[in-house]
Image (cartoon, rainbow, N blue to C red; front, top):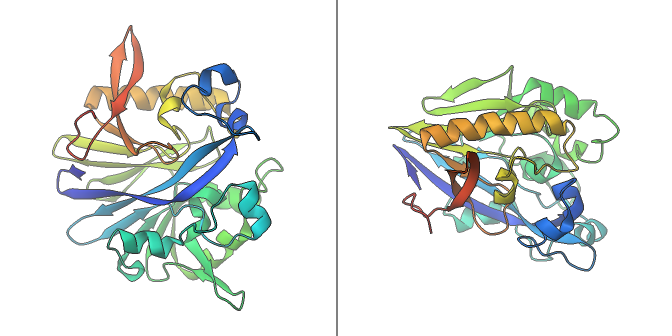
Length: 285
C-alpha cells in the first residue's frame, strides 16, 4: 500500500494461538467464535504481523513479532509451528535485509511484539537483531517492562529487553513525531506506555493499532481483552481513535488479525463499524 510517498508492507512474522476467552474478555464465546473458531483447548489462531515503512531515506520496522527464542514446551503452549520463521527469514521473503533497517518502532515490550528484537546464538548469547538501527519506545513502557506488575510479568521477558541497552534506544515521553509523516500516539489501556504508529501524507493515513485494536473484531466498542490492564480506559481511547480515523477516512492496521492486515471504517446507525479489509489501493475487497 502507498500512503503518499510512503510504501507500506505488511510482513507475516508467524502465527500463534491464544485463549479465545482471554482475547475477548467479557464477550460471550457464542459471539466471538463466529469469526474466530476455537480449537479443543479454546485457543484461536492469531497473526504476528509487523509493518515495514519505506521512505526515500529511511526504512522503519514497526514491532518484531514473537522471535525465535522458544523451547519446545513454549511452542506447544502458544501454538508456534516448528517451521515458524525467524524475523530475518520473514524480512528476506519481503526482499529486505536486516542491516538495511534504520529505525525500529516498538509499540510495547510484550513478548509477541518484541520477541524479534533480539536473537540467540547457538552458544546461547542473546544480542540485538538490529544493532545499527535507532529504536523508539515510550519511557513509561520501558520502565514498566523493567519492573512489571505481577499480572504482566510473564509478558515482559528479559531476554527481549536487556540487550536493548546495547542499541541506540530513544525513550519518548508521550506523543512524538518520529520523522516527517510518521508519528506515535500513546495508549495506556492495554499496558502502560503503549504507542500506536501513524503514517500520514497527502491526505491519506494509516494507524498501526497494536493491542488497542488487535483484530478487526475489536473495532466493536465493547470488545476488549482479558489481557488489558485498564479495560475502561481502553474503551475510551479506542472510541477517540476510531472517531479520528473515521473522520479522516484513514485505514487501520491489525497486528493480530488472522485474516488480513488493513481495514476501513464506516458509520452505521450512529456507531462506528468495521467496513471491511482493503487491498493495496485502499479499496474494499
